[in-house]
Length: 126
Image 1 (cartoon, rainbow, N blue to C red):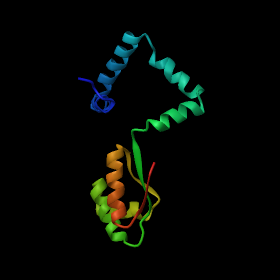
Image 2: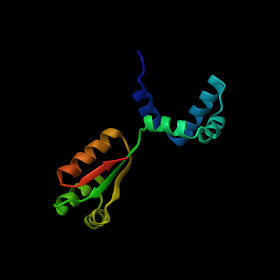
Image 3: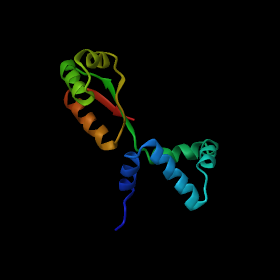
Image 4: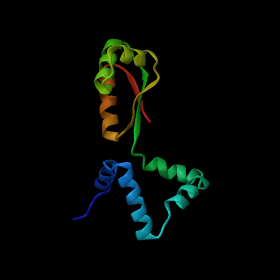
């Protein structure tokens, strides 16, 4: 049975920092590489390294651009998505453009975007 890239990412995402540290050490030993050397080489790669990172983006930010004509519905949607209280959600909507959710999966970002757009807001995913 083949393990998909998504399965690996999900398993890594569930690991603690200590488990991730052990995993990196295991990769270094098994493949004879050093994570430190790769981290140093990354910035030297310049635009090519940035382009590769953009293609493999796994975390997204949902940004509320404008609340549109139905501010109350947008506030309700923000509360549902974030779990914030009424005042905090209202402050977030009033200060648009503002990130609503950061570091979420593409599916979660799309779901949040749909809820906000259904409420009348303009939303971007970055």
